[in-house]
Image (cartoon, rainbow over all chains, first blue to last red; front, top):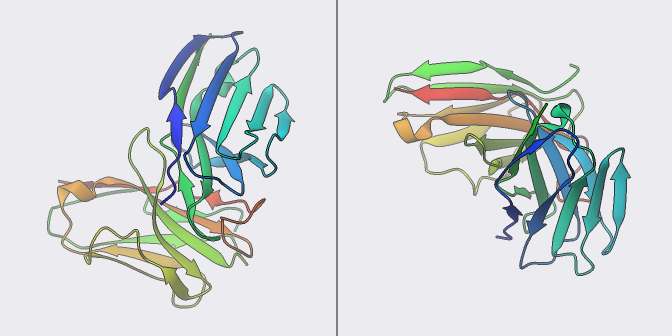
Length: 111
Length: 118
């Protein structure tokens, strides 16, 4: 089973600050996805990265896939309280149908 | 429907009872998944259906857990003789036409069933 480790596990910051969360593995992934989960809801897909070194931007969120396709990062600029949630990275779990999730980073943005 | 629907939203049951959790995927979605999620953790894979065929049940913890999707649409996850360690959020997800491991295949998750075994 390919494991995804996320760090930090918890992050509490003030509105307006920047932050980066990480997703790392010892295995190569053909693609990685990032999901955000708000309290009481299911995870919602933010982005999929496929190519090593790829950078994708979604408004204030910047996603990067490592050159070796073993790691990924999510950078948020000028965080807002609405960014609060559990950020999950996920990748194919050894097959084309199984998605394996990391344990997530629980982000709290305080007003 | 507009999204993945799960019922009940909350279930409290006594230890030893059987429970059945229902998932109604997005209409037309071929793939259906069951995940279990502990509070503040990422979802953990339980089982996968392609149409009505259960392709993988390797994540089911033990033989008290079973799942079916007889007509390739609605799925039921059944837990027999529940134990306190079964308490968790059980989430269903569906995707349109292929497995979640393919790039750009999006999983749509339901709101989950919070199971509490007392």
